[in-house]
Length: 471
Ligand SMILES: *Cc1c(COP(=O)(O)O)cnc(C)c1O
Image (tube, rainbow, N blue to C red; front, side, top):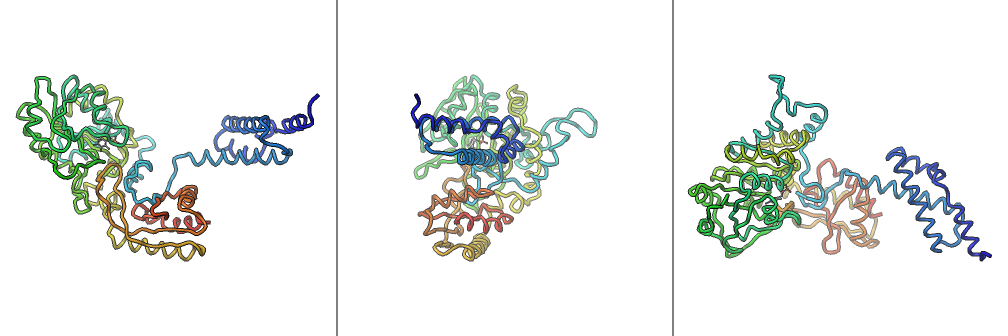
């Protein structure tokens, strides 16, 4: 005989709706409409399964049929929201980290966005409109970056890591690459210079010490198997104090006198001088080329401010070996990438990059205009928030990010928000959950809003979303 409790649970189990019943609800219909029936069936099964498990484990006593149906509907709603939230969608970056790798690095210029739209349908990616014959993929973007950097040739691949692999595989496979101990760095967790070199078939010869390396250290390491000298920009890492490394010019001269090549991985790669914004440490690509580097690689989505891409620029000889490497085929970008790069590079060509390219616009924003925007938003917030919330403007600093200029903190104004009702973590999470999500940072138990990385067109929305998140 079953106990009373067991038969009660049995009847509750029977009250669990069937998959078809669940799919008949409003939320399930909306889910199926947006994500397809198969996905909706999967969620319905999961949700029902979870409830059955909980009931059998005795975790849910005394639930009636209606509560059960309601709970199942609620879980379906959560699944629907979760599915929507996981899409790549617009967020407002209020962190002040300009090249925020987790938020997609560089935001694109209006010109680049338009170019992407234009190229979305058919476009003459590998088609010569003059002759009606096959053309070379990416030729315009490559010509533009070569022109801007003063290089003879350029090849573009999917990112700078791919560029480094392609260069080493083309020019140094089975040979030795001589590199300073101070440059054997890890960039962003999954790009370790020594590992990349090894995979590309080059063997590593370390010279000098962590803080000091001389040209003669490179020269003394030359054997008959030396392929090239490699210089890597340490990017997210700085050694300060008693340090010295040879310049690109000195290394190029030493390499060339022995019939060797110099390859520089510049990482961020500045196309224009950014010294006045505190970025004097970033290698200027045109200077490296002028100083004699044979090949230089850098990213498309760091200080160039465009889409993810890897630029390889340099002399015609090595570049033609790079272009004809069969690995290139596995690394070539899509039409969307070339379209965006063409537009971004056009801004550098006309000299309008500080107005048009968001990364450079944000970096070069004056303290006065940043303070003005910050005070305006703070005033709007103060009008809208409840008592118990404090909104203060204070001096502070932003971050360049993306492994560029780790020691540089562009000064500006920040908004500090504190609430008597909720902690900073809670407010930060509520902002993240808003639509569109607002990403902020936390400092001294306050939520900090840094407008350096917020577009003018997002300010009005922010003035509504923040008070909402403060509840
Ligand atoms: C960022 C960086 C890379 C990797 O560039 P991705 O475009 O992210 O692949 C490689 N080398 C250096 C020196 C870098 O700073």
